[in-house]
Amino acid sequence: MGALLVSQSEPVASTDALRIPAEAMQHYLPGGHPALPLPHVTPDVVLHLFTHCSITEPILVPAVAEPLLVMVLAGSAIVEERAAGGEWAQTEVRVGDFFLTSTMQPYEMRWQTRDGDSFEVMHLYLAPTLIDHAARDLGLQQAGPVSFVDLSGGHDDWVRMLLEQLRAELTGSRTPSQLLVHSLAQALAIHLVRTYRAPLPAGRRSNALQAYKLRRVIDLMNQHLAQDFSLAKLAQAAQLSEYHFSRLFKRATGLSPSHYFIRLRIARARQLLLETERSVIDIGLEVGYSSPSHFSQVFRREVGVTPSAYRDPGRD
Image (cartoon, rainbow, N blue to C red):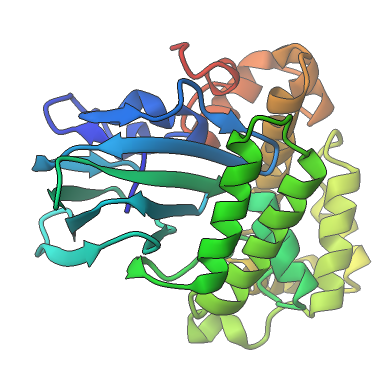
């Protein structure tokens, strides 16, 4: 079940406009009433709680970079989903059922509540870095952008338990423990990668960069985010020619080395924007962008909003 929902009555300029960061979700939920006044945002997760009434007119669900989990907390509903122009698929959901969404394409949804006029759900986004660390810990060659199967109305005791523990920690009366939140989120990421990772295309399973070389190269990238990208240095670390390194790296991760490097830079920038009060200019410099306008342009292309709007979703 998607989050970040946009009414079809609103003008949409392009698909790029439908890539919205998780933190901005509450601004795009027509007809829903947040159960919490503000989103719970940590470096590892974004959590929102919502109470929904029936939605009979289709709504457009934008794509986001983070994997999304939605679990039903109370009530039940008939949920319908479809790709643009496709056939509707119907799922009946009740307490404990969950949706897993990992897509870069927008899609449509509508739902009808059962046995009452509303139902409660929690939306949880996991930071891409958690998924990346989980894949690397499990020794997977696909240490880059892991994708998941889309699941509607699933039931998994581990997922339910971990989501409930995260909700309790983030919404309880005590100050949340960042260490506990991180541990629960990491455990959830590992379970999702083990259980629901989408299979790789056949062409990316063979002749990919070996896992130990991939880890070495990614560590080197992270250590030099403020410096210019150097394909030669990375290829040397992998003990390969630049041509063969680029080809094998893309087979392992799905991205070129330069694009992967940009993703790492932006992931670090997102973390700094949420965790610190440093200026956008300083953060851009730390991740290698001396020009604020260039940093903003790249950030918007990768995330969907400017760095300032990402830090404060009410802007722009």
